[in-house]
Amino acid sequence: MNIASFLSPNAVRVMGGLSGKKRLFQELSDMAGAIYGIDPGQTFDSLQEREVLGPTGVGHGVALPHARLHGLNQMAGIFLRLEKPMEFDAVDRLPVDLIFALFAPKAAGVEHLRALAIVSRTLRDEGLRAKLRRNTDPAALHAVLTESRSTLPA
Image (spheres, helix red, strand yellow):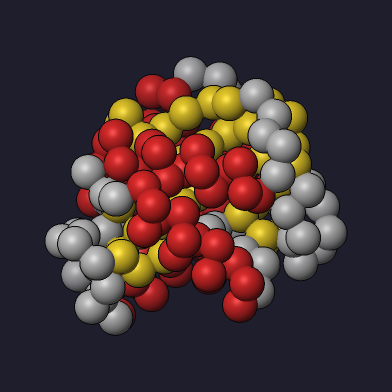
């Protein structure tokens, strides 16, 4: 398993600033609906519910919002690079500008955890984060993310 197995090229975007988490989750939900056919209402509610358990801002300007969803058959990801970082209640209290949302089938267990581990390991790389921040082309961002060596056995 690697990021290319769950991140569609058209699920990578550069966006201006967002006004807050609620607006971010709405944007991610709308994108998940348009790209992967996932119900936006269920996605939004699931992202909100997960965030109540604890912020998904993992530090260094990175957030990994994630949810398990009914009706989804395989892992699906969305990556956003924000032109203007937003407050996210991250563990290091820094604003977030790199967001990788991960959606898993409701019944996914280990597969969901493996995908989160791959994304986390990938975005922990300082050099990779710098490349992502220097790029504004979605195709280039997708290439940087999917060419990463972070993989786990299927």
